[in-house]
Length: 124
Image (cartoon, rainbow, N blue to C red; front, side):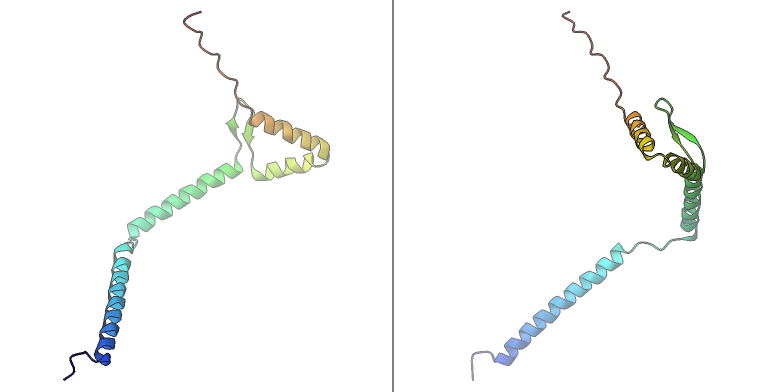
């Protein structure tokens, strides 16, 4: 008898090992899908989300259609979109004046507050 294993049984061992590895990986992928899948939305959760979306859209609509002070000290106002478009059309009639006004407004809106005076030294 031949003491060496046959080539067929050796190659079958490799095939079985590779097939086993693929099955283990597939089982791990299925387990991860099961554990990472979120719970289905219940009716109460869907109602909460609909209510939050409605509140958000109402707040956005109010901000887009009302006047409000953004920074009263600097004179920055929020305008409705239609009104802002009308003003920009009026200003665009004279491009040089519109450009200088825009630059002045940007400088005013982004102006840095002056530094507070330094505390006097206790040795003075």
